[in-house]
Length: 28
Image (tube, rainbow, N blue to C red; front, side, top):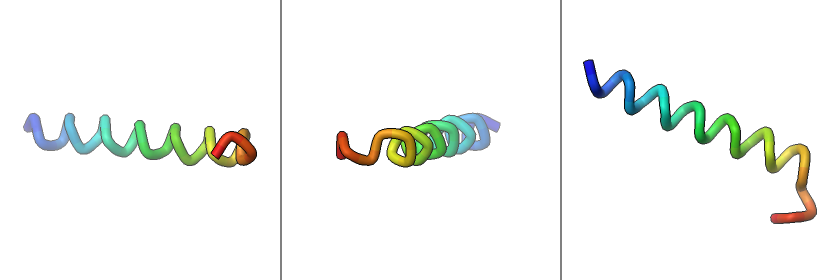
């Protein structure tokens, strides 16, 4: 069950990073 929680957190972090990269492409 913890594997699903960790996987969900990783997906949220990656999704947030992708959104941040789309909003602030010049900071990368």
